[in-house]
Image (tube, rainbow, N blue to C red; front, side, top):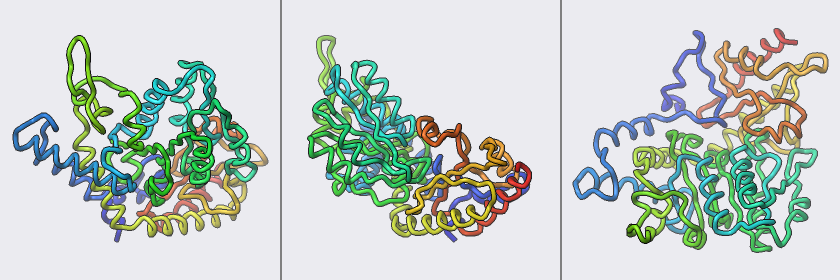
Amino acid sequence: MLRDKFPILGEKVYNRQLVYLDNAATTQKPVQVLDAIGYAYTHFNANIHRGVHYLSRIATEEHEKSRLEVANFINAKSAKEIIFTKGTTDSINMLAFAFGEGYINEGDEIIVSQMEHHSNIVPWQMLCERKKAHLKVIPLTDDYTLDIKAFEQLITEKTKLVSVAHVGNVLGVENPVEQIITIAHRYAIPVLVDAAQSIARLKTDVQSLDCDFLAFSGHKVYGPTGIGVLYGKEKWLEALPPVEGGGEMIEHVSFGKTTFNTLPYKYEAGTPDFIGSFALAEALRFVRQTDIETISSHEQNLTRLMLEQLQDIKGVKVYANKATVPCGVVSFNVYSNGKLIHPFDVGVLLDHQGVAVRTGHHCAQPLMEVLGVPGTVRASVALYNDEGDIDIFVSALKKAVEMLV
């Protein structure tokens, strides 16, 4: 069975079998990825790029092969367009600084959406504060989708960048990023796609999307923590300034002047996480072998089943577009006589029955304001979940509701 490849799923929680439904926060790791980490440390642990000895050469080769694996996975034109980072948040912060230094002036505008994760809001706010620029927000419609007509009306001659999530981390809505990119490019505006929630469940083709930038985290796609990717079209990465200074990102250093390295090293100061990149490549191979379309179909079936069963529980309100099935994520709350039961209380009762879910504002407080709640309970599936997990979750939730309502 596929789930047998994930050792942690055999763990017991409060003497109950673990049912892990917090995959939007982080995914568990298959044996191949765990083994890759150990293999790298025991066979080629040496600083890369600058060493002439055998271990350093092997580490360098594996790191660069991993970069090519990432490029192939998202169909980038070149491995030079792949920058290794610490994760999605780091990638967006890097771009916010580089793009801000190179292209944002007082009075300019950046557009995000109402459903963004804080990591795709705060870096742009900080940039706007530094540059005296303006942050504009695409509103949601009543069915929790982005208002595309309103988006186009937000664009002015001062708009310099659009940054949106491919899939919302709370509502699981797949945003029409291709349409957004097409509209933005009509006005010569570049677009960043936050692929943190989509990378593990939707086919990602940056050339087909024609996005200018894309960011994702390794830990969201069955890889290790602390490694992520910023993709950028070569023309942009060549034009933007470096973000951090130090070893590797330089061509020549003197006290009078420093010149910078070629892509992608211009953006990778210091010793990179070559162990993480090696394990990330293994995770992407695992996803590719499992087949992303098979994963997507499996997760949609589980999400549909979850939605159907939640409808039968009195007091449960689900936040979802009724016309579509969310991408692997279901957010809901429990009410008693019209009064909200705090999501934390629901989460604790589920946890004590062996079911792991996420509670709170999910780093999306502006969206919570739109929903009119302080937070939600979020259950999110992955390729290793099955119908039995959904049944256990629903049964546990019914018991929790009985106790709380």
